[in-house]
Length: 263
Image (cartoon, rainbow, N blue to C red; front, top):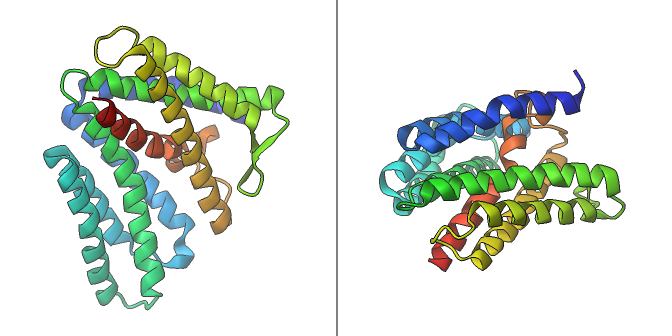
């Protein structure tokens, strides 16, 4: 199966499932976030095995971060992140291996902050009273539209490289095409719904698109530094789970804090 066809099939199967779980919310969404987060974290630690991440500390930290978010919001999200440092240091102390403490603990913490913080923001956005379901669905569809439009616009019209030293395949033309699509989706999804104004919906679309692009580039920079092309093969043509989540892990927090600022 060609990579493009594989991407299409995976999206066709996963997108309705994800949207359905988001619609249900609650512990259903928590379970989905936890499963996806653990897989993405596993891929990150496998890519960076040379830095000797403290995998057990990272897994515990991610679980505590998402569980804290589900039960107590932002303060307990931060509590989970802080607990990662403690657990990682304990694991380091009992480990027979003696990697660099700074490198091992820092890389372990990076995974929890990046994956746990990004998915935690999506849980927080879903818990916004009354409008949380609409907001999360809008952000997910906006990220999907941005990614899809940027991919095809870049393939058809891409001439000017966006970040040549990080991701030579990404173009300014793709970025513009993706941003236009993202703004359009956010605008029509939130049009005259009584929570955000139409102008604020445009701002949400633009912010989500910019954050999604930066999230994609951030993962590309990490992979380039670690010398890998894809985080894994769990999702066929999409690569690994981290490859699929990279945009959302930045777009989720950006959207959540923008909504807080606007409301």
